[in-house]
Length: 346
Image (cartoon, rainbow, N blue to C red):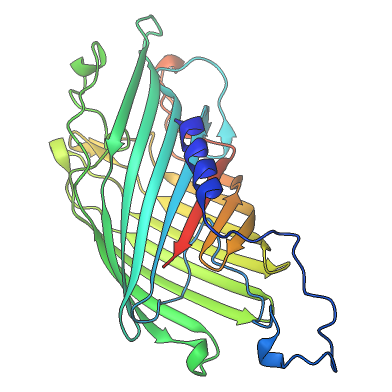
């Protein structure tokens, strides 16, 4: 799935019409007295950094403008943690998880200061588990398909282009139960729980309100962004529910040229425990903080390609110890992620 997604992005870049050469520069002889008017000179538009790859911002599209993006994310959780301490040894339960996702996003300026966006995810989720007695059969479960679609609206409270000192936006929306939430556990794991937990399904079966606040400030070739998102999941399928989630993000971007940007982000996720078959799943939830360096290639005025690598710098994952030790349950964590985004302006 990872290589499939990367191939799609590569072909999309190759097929884009009119992408400029990154090494192209200004034409010689355009200084004062060259005979060209300033308005006729190429590359006179201010150089700006585009939106950061692993977070949202405080911008709202002008009325009638439409943008779209394809974002691919790779996550491999292969280590067990009790708080911030990695646990060695053999334990029952989940011990390895790999998620690939493609998120298709479309945004449109509906009215002056009002935009709408739709996010459509496609997932490939694989989880490996060991039984409590550590005796085979061990289990690998894979789910592939459409996830839960998110629809949101955003309103501009402040706009730099209209004389305000920054861009500030407030938004709200809803995650819809469009993904399959009925995948069953394989035997013998189905003896304890017939269905996969809410983190393993393609969807949760719940309607989840979302609330956001974003801010963006441009100065010269730089931009500073902040974004906060709070999700309140509803009751899901099969007496399950995902825990409340708070995401906070801060980022800085700098335009090296008309074709390349650099960026650095701080991304935090504070996740409450999930509910599974009417009770809390004690090895889920926790607080993780990432630092994300990234680069953007602005291929033209209507397309761009971005890459970011979120690296974990802090984690406090929830879990519990038991006797015998094989019955302990700890949180699964990753060391890094890979995020790519291909964006278009229409």
